[in-house]
Image 1 (cartoon, helix red, strand yellow):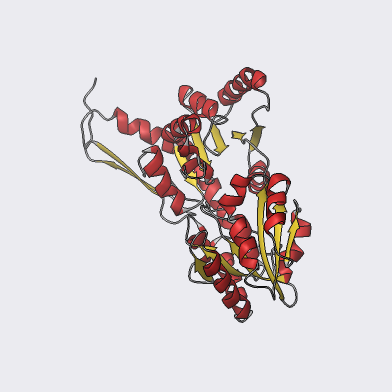
Image 2: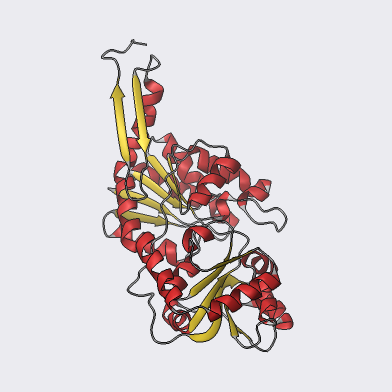
Length: 373
């Protein structure tokens, strides 16, 4: 089976899916050009690839997946969209989310409405898709991202370190990830070292100007160098206004960090009843929660690891994606079958996602005849 795999930017979790799927299928990766002048060529490439492919899979709903879904629909090929966060939400107060502006909401809504299967990484995003895109829920299958517990693991005794990791180059990212709250909270917890990884440019300059002496700012760090920071830190803070399923939080919990997070988006799906919750943007509450986490026994971090190992293993995502991709053509034609039924009640096609790693399909033929058109 040939799969068209469309992505708009390189990232660890997108690369993981691409590499995994390449072990089972003939995968044709495609990314949009950086120049607007090259978009006609990109659309033509998408059209040709879609004609030859059986299934199309795209990461994020936007302009880059618009042609993929359009041509999949035209050639009656199955199309799947993985929703990661930004493409499902709306926070106009900080200009975040595809549905916070017309320019990005138009392609996001079209893609989500016309794709055959929508695969958000969290149940929170499933609700946001239904609310913001106005689509039915029976074609949405939440499939969380998966994590390698053999790589992200504790190593040695924890230190008096509070860590947060977030790619941020501008002030909008600072607000989205709550980095200003993190740095300001450090002033109220002077006995601990606070580390921010992933900040550059304007974001770094701003945080440096407001940071007390116990804050260390570090730029982009690859996974191999990031792991020791997770392993040394006792507390990990995820203070975002919204998240799909936060990758860095899950990695930190696997590494034995005690989580402190906002009760926003997919953060509670990762944390559950482990760790400490704080209101978004509340500096004093954040500082108090971090103090509690620093004073908590290290065993709480091991419980955090157990939760991620149990709920979000790498293998479970692989199994779920493979199952859904393999039945995607059937799901496509089951929808055609619904529309083709001439008498209401003749054919009932029920698709039940069940667990994140299983899909149940029932086709109930209530009568043995159809009325010819």
